[in-house]
Length: 469
Image (cartoon, rainbow, N blue to C red):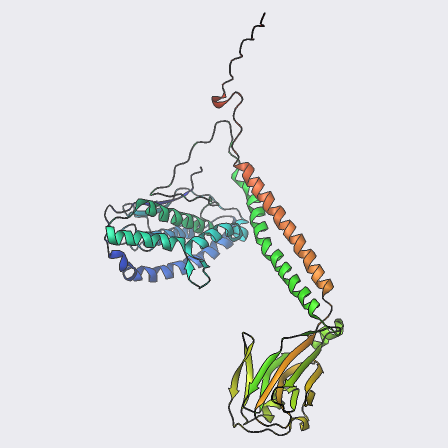
């Protein structure tokens, strides 16, 4: 076990108040306000330190002292407050180390970080942040409630203190261990310390290192960097590999849904209104020349409607401004979304009345009308448009079943390409994870037992068994 340079100590009070933890949040408001300012300064100064390390290879000592002081202050407030509830002694307002305070944080030694570390420190810390996020409640249940190991342990400790007056030492040590892990990771992210260990060191004081076996020379710390990078990079590459797989599934699903003309049709939607029209507005289309010119069998739009009340039906599409002028002062329902397959509307202000015969208007770019099922077809062009469904005579009370379809190209080649890319990235990800995991595992494999058993003692040779007569 290596001695980590950040020393986190926590000595609980022999006797704690049963009820004080109920109001500590109020007592700590001044500290929270000050820490908000201090942490803002820490973020800015850490960026300065990152730049200084990249350019000069040295961490500015004043910045180091400030950042260490902010971590120290944070730990004192956390130990008094809701990170551990370990003391009733109010924390002092200072960045300096206070030796007689129950919670201390010290940096025993430090070395200059590598020049390249600011570029990848966050990447190396990602596995730690995932674990700490789960402990602190980054995950949630299906009902949205947070799942937090730290909060659960703290709640049990607080209730035990309230009803028994006793703080279970095991829970205290566990909370301190989780806080110690978090402080080590934060110190690493601001480049104060080397890479933190994957360890939950519980208890009041930091564990002391055990001596290395005399026959095993410690491996250089720098040699682990490549394995850690491979492991982290492999884990991160799993996300794009999975994303490509999902994208491939979506594209192949669309391709399977195409009809012979290349159209993908939506489910039928039941529309109804007591006004004279239902609209889908502000449909903005851009750059059609690029994708209709370069891709065949794309750019068509179909809207099919069937009247549900026996009246002749009309479907048309026109520029947004033309539809606004036509329906000005006339109430109509604008479709704003879908909830569980049901259309949601927003009523445009105006008088509920009939509109002039829709089919006689000259501004439509595409229309269809009739007594049975009607289908409007349109080759899309750039612009801002609105689709209108109305009775053919313009009367109020529109009831229709509508579905749309859009023409998409053959997606087989694109889906196959995404599948191949996903497989390649997935294999690379698995290879990096194996490389990093095996490399780190070899560094921590204990040496084989010495020849001759424990202690290296070679057993004496047994005398030969005399031959029997």
